[in-house]
Image 1 (tube, rainbow, N blue to C red):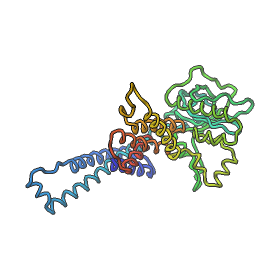
Image 2: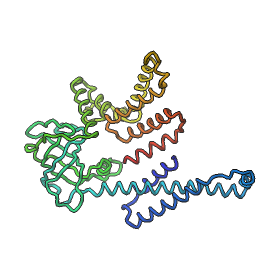
Image 3: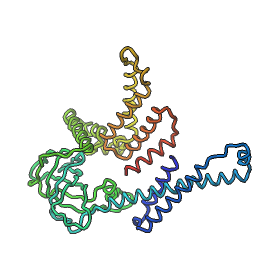
Image 4: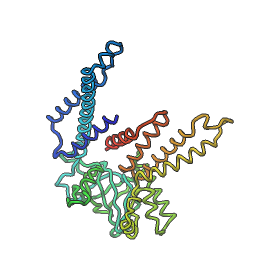
Length: 378
């Protein structure tokens, strides 16, 4: 699997460095190359070694041994090539699907009525809030290209305070949108690429907050439930801590939202080089998983079932690993499931499955599976 996932990653990297997406000719060549490479790999690596003594003695001959080594080397090269073609094609397909959605140029800077629901935890600022909005319907359907399904909106509090912006709440809004655009200055964050990575194909603001309509039926789904849980956790922290100086840091560590950090906190962390500590990553996930696994294992070792000690039924190590993985999954969901969190979660999942199956797994296998699963998701 290491060769497959590394080849897959190389294919994705090659696609990312292309100036344009492949055309039909490139797709045909890609399919042929991957098919031939997979067939060669299956033949070169799947040949059974001879069993009788005469063939075994012949295999030890210098010429046959060299030929077998070359065939094995070419077989593994074919595995890399087939996996690279698969990664290139998968990334190209994902890119084509995402870039197909575009806001028509004529619709920019004009009022448009849309219906949908808030799909992310709102980020609050001094004058308003910003959030991701999942569009269910547009007031105008006459568009030559598929319209964006996910947009980023800002709601500025002008004459009236902001309404409760709850994830999953469905709204009918009048908005003004534009295509994503950002400065291309060297060394700075590329806003357009960051929005594309999140699937955001249009940005804008609520142009007429006074006529915004909150619809009676909320959206549903696992993503909405997770975002609502994050919002409820944030509201609970706000209620408990109030104006405490460390409120923003606690919110950032619990939900991954950094908009509550004060300017003084940001300046202090920037000057001390500790800004990464409030950006949830593998360090935080490992800490939560280790703590939860230790507690689960300690409780299981002291549990009994009808006079039988629980570790005699299921080993305490497996229960501890299951508890660690469950806690890590919950924390990853509350943290927004960003790429560093995904990476750590997949590595923990691979190790947990190997331990439960009674198998030893090399570190390189863990890293390869984490790499592949992150790329498969996006």
